[in-house]
Each structure stands twice: as structure tokens, then as C-alpha cells.
Image (cartoon, rainbow, N blue to C red; front, side, top):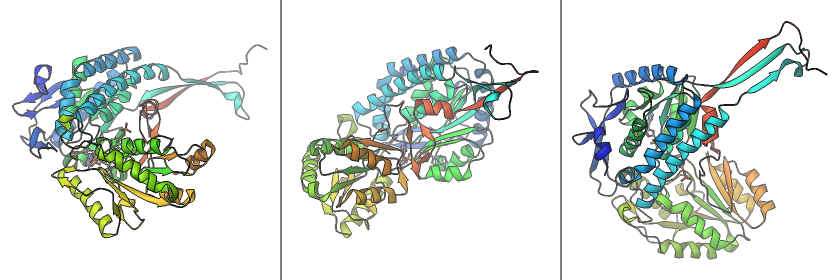
Length: 496
Ligand SMILES: NC(=O)C1=CN([C@@H]2O[C@H](COP(=O)(O)OP(=O)(O)OC[C@H]3O[C@@H](n4cnc5c(N)ncnc54)[C@H](OP(=O)(O)O)[C@@H]3O)[C@@H](O)[C@H]2O)C=CC1
Ligand SMILES: O=C(O)[C@H](O)COP(=O)(O)O
């Protein structure tokens, strides 16, 4: 159970502690932040509201710990990560329980998130050993005017202190996708978990603590992003920010200093359906892509752009599948569970009302109870409706009927987002042309958008982000190239 047994150490009364200097601590603020269970809408957990002074101390320890961690052999860093991964997977049940209570993730998906996270940590350890163990050797006479008098050796060195800020929807997985690459590359890491999801993240951090990482190397400060977020992101002790979330990321990128940024932000992932598509496959992927975790995934299908000639058949198939979705509490492993907060539910409702006023066709009756919103397909959506452009981050999916491929590509590219998209057709040549024309970081052919498998590159264009994630790209992003040049007194050529 959460906060008991091995995890009892992280709890003080009914308030979870924060993690600094290798210890679980109470904040001197004596203030707490409540985590509201999206299903009951009552306080489920409480975490410490850390102070600026505590953040300063964490940054100092992170700086000191990083210096000796960078001198720790790569294989030893990997060994500790493998240990943390094993502990994480062993304790999947209490962590999954927190995910169910804090963010209403369906029970089975919650377990999957923890297991996937353990696998990600192990994979990162293995990949790090491979790619960080290699560098480059260059000779000077490749460049015009040079003799072979200079040998350049390049290697990858850590950046220093990495600040990781994940969002509520994957508080464990999107935290370890930042922690593991940072650590294998010789950096220290400060985690600011999302408030909804903070307790799952604290349990995950305890698994790293139990693995035996040096004190100060990993810290986890809790508190509302709106209160300590700016102080953290503008802190002079931070050498890199890895952020996943919404528009907050745009604001951070404007305020942060001269540090590398990895930003994975929102999306309005389009699903373009051509006339020759396998409509059963499309319908199955629209359900998986649009409604899993109640649409609260940046990679969720967020608008269907279907050729008019097949639209009626597709809409009927999707409607039939929606009717079979189970709606209710995450504990019962329902397909559709309450969205994360009341404000999120209100926002979704605003989009639905706007679509109603402007004449969208409701394929189901709109139904809401507290934070629980029943799955809704909106047909005949037009570009003047907000839902055509904004991401609901909920179980509401708009369908726009198109008369040409160009119209679909135009709608996709007119979005301020550019995360992923997908195209369904049996004609692979057409699919490639459409993929090339879509201004998104990834295009999936004949499947719904998805970040995983976690070693694939994952990136957004335009307002969807900066840089690229995925295990290898994250390791590279959290390092800097260092060159050492050997200057010879006379040119040295290989024996001919
Ligand atoms: N591209 C991607 O990979 C993903 C994108 N998203 C996008 O994220 C949004 C939903 O997630 P959500 O968690 O609500 O996103 P937010 O941007 O609201 O929050 C993300 C994180 O930022 C923190 N935060 C809030 N304010 C600040 C601040 N001023 N400075 C620093 N950190 C701050 C939050 O903490 P706190 O919780 O305490 O406010 C949270 O940890 C959607 O737009 C979605 O598309 C979500 C997941 C993945
Ligand atoms: O946070 C998100 O929404 C993701 O990064 C999407 O991950 P998924 O495609 O694996 O659900």
C-alpha cells in the first residue's frame, strides 16, 4: 500500500515529505499542498510546499554531488540505474495505486506505466554505456590548407544540474524519462513533480533512494508550479531544463537563462483518413488514440479529418465502439475515468458548448458527472469551432469531413501545434507524400500517434516543443561535446 512498509519513511503523519540530500524531509514552510482525487473530488494526499530557501539548498547539494558523480565510472552509474529499475518494478503495486488515486489512471494502465518506466530506466542504462563510451577521432588534413598536425578527440561530458518538470498524465514515466538519461550521462537531477501525480513521483524517487545513489544527486521538491516554478526555472544553479506539459513550457522558454531546453508541449494530433483506408483499423485506432486515458495524452488523436465519401461509414463504426467503452472509476479499470480536475472538466465543457452553438452533430448525448465526462464524438465540425483547433485533453473528439487530401494537410498545418499526426491509407506512396507534407514531429502510417516505444525519437514542431526526446536523444541532449586537440610538431601521415 502507498506510504506503508518500505515507503513509510516518506510519510509524516498525513503529509508526504520532500527529498533532499539523500533524506526525506519536512518543509520549514509548515505549509502543505492538497492533492485532490479526481474521482471523489476530495483531498487524497498532501505534500510539502517547499520554500525558496529549500530550493537553494537542493541546488547547492546537486552541484556538489554532480562533481563526484561525473567521476563515477559509467558502468557503476549503469549498475545503480539497473538496481533502481528493478526496485521500481518490484514495487509497482503501491505506485500504481497512487496513480489511480491522484490522476484517475485506469488500474491496469497505472501498472503498465510503472513497468514501462522500469524498462525505460534499464534501457537508458544500457544505451548510455554504449553511446557515452564512444567519441570521435578527427585529423586536421581533411580541411583545406591543413597538414596532418592536429588530432582531435571528442567525448561527451555532463552539463551539470538538470531540472526535470513532468506533467500530470505520466508523473512516473515522464519523470524517469528525464532522470535516467540525466544520471547515466553524469548529471545530477532536481525533480519538480506535477502536483497531481506528486505522490506517485515521490514513491518512484524512493526507489532510486533505495538503490543507493549518492546523497544530493537526486532531489525532489514539491509545491505548486505557479508558486515555485519560476524560482526553479530561473535558478542560476540550473544547467538544463527538461519540461513536459502545456503552454507553461512556452512561458518557461522565454524566461529561462542560456541553458539547453527540452520542451515537449501540447498537440492537436490529426488523423487523416483516405478513401481506400481499412475503416475497421481506423475505427479501432481512433478509439485507442482518442479515448485511452480519457484523451489526456499529448499524442491523443485530437481531430479526425476524413474523406467525405467514407465519413458516414467511419463515424458509424466509431459510434459502435464508443458505445462499448466502460465509463466509471479508475479502480474498476474503466476505459473512461474522471478527468484530472474540475477546471479541466469545465474547459472541456466549454469546447463542447461552443461546438453545440455552432451546429456540430452530437453522435452521443453530452453527459457529465463531476469530473467524469462520457466519451463524445462530434461530427461535422467546422473550422470556426474552437474544438477544431484547441486540445480538449479529455474524451471529446471532433470529426471534420474533407473533400481532398490537400484540405486535410492544410488543416493539420494551420494548427499552431505540430506534435504527431497519422494517416490511414493502403497506398504507401501516398502515405509518404502526406507524411512529408505534414508539419509535425512524427507521422504514423496506419496507426494512432504514440510516443513509445520509448527509444524512438519524440519531438514536436512549432508550439509543440523544442528538441527531441527518446532515450538516445535525451542522453545526447543532456551532454556537451568536449574536444581535446593533440598538436604535433611535424605532420604525421600513416605509413604508405
Ligand atoms: N508533448 C508532450 O509530451 C506532453 C504534453 N502535455 C501537455 O500538457 C498539458 C497538460 O498537462 P499539465 O500537467 O496540466 O501541464 P502544465 O503545463 O500545467 O504543467 C506541467 C508541469 O509544469 C508545472 N508548472 C506549472 N507552472 C509552472 C511554472 N510557472 N514554472 C515551472 N513549472 C510549472 C506543473 O506543476 P503543477 O502541477 O504544480 O502546476 C507541472 O509539473 C496539455 O497541454 C498537454 O498537451 C502533456 C503531456 C505530454
Ligand atoms: O505525455 C504524453 O501524453 C505522452 O508523452 C504520450 O505518451 P504515449 O503516446 O506513450 O501515451
